[in-house]
Image 1: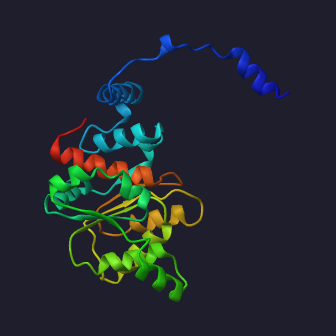
Image 2 (image 1 turned 90 degrees about the vertical axis):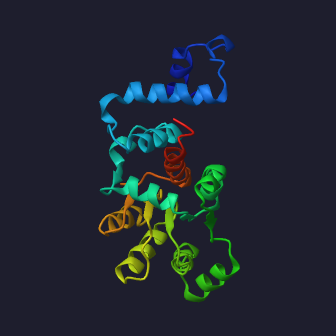
Length: 228
């Protein structure tokens, strides 16, 4: 028998339904943010970044994001202005796309898209021997409209963004660079932080589509004041 599992079972406190807080959905969120604020204390920045940092912690239960989330100067205001101007949000996964609050985005006059499953993207990626994520960036660059690009999975999307920005072919209003993983993840984020494009980047290996979506939502909630 596994000794650590045995000790854990012996030390564990029995939990009953009496230990469960009976709360409404909005009260659960409010209570969660109270806990985050209390446990984080003064580590959370006391400015426009706070809402985003808190919501990422709320999504991940990971306080490391207090230190990992990096913002270029003026990134939050640039993002809010872009949303006010009806910017589209382009994501690198359908998971991130599904997590974005569509009513809040529609209220701001924008839309959200993911091109990863588009047939033209699949064909071009196969022909060139590259990822769909990088081809999706090319498709977004051809939109000729304000774009916020949210990357939660594919470092190749960030690399392609860096290439097109360096060539003067694409200037997103904001890049949310939070892919999770091991191969080229750290490096791709650092590339984005070397551009002059506003960015919100989760430095290091951590991130994910859920993080990308929640950053988008935090910005939308800041815009309409609908959530904490």
